[in-house]
Length: 236
Image (cartoon, rainbow, N blue to C red; front, side, top):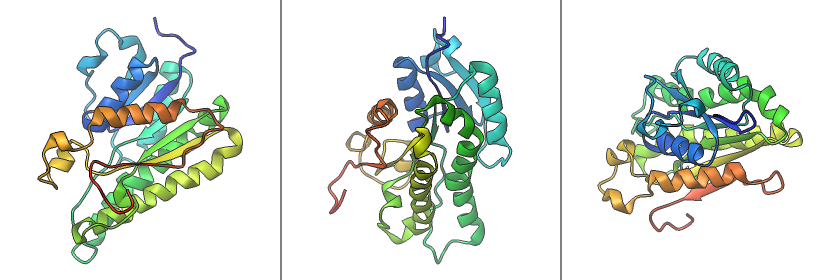
């Protein structure tokens, strides 16, 4: 049986890749999870843990989706202790090549949707006295590495700022927010933009353990940003 006292986390973009691995790791560590998926389907790893897994049809482009997701998760579990905003999109265009709709799309999914999710869950996060928000940003939110990464970087710089802004807004209520900034991760998205072998990229399971660690840290060990890289760079 699910323990009603065990913490609850919402994970967006949970259908595959990083989000799927994060959710699986958190269930393994005793969390109850609400999975935001475009097409909800119970993952194979959830077999035997159905009482601790909630599925919700979530589309980050639907501006009313976050409030409905929070309402459904509260109805299922009665509390929300943490959010992992993992859903994201990349349009590999320079800031000159990109059209306004490209920028709007990335800002909408990568920044506005996580902000709406935090806003919708805010009262619940504060009520715990140790609410946690993880924004899956990117090292592209720390530097612009190439022309084609430029437009994506606009949104990810904003995503990093969002994590800092949430941390500022909720610090006195025990809310801690972290921008997790990976480089190339062995996912479909990375495969489309790098020819580096998958085994040399950061593995989603390793990133999942990083997120689990950050969620478990006490209020007195606040981590504003966490950079993860698979290759040597000047700063990361």
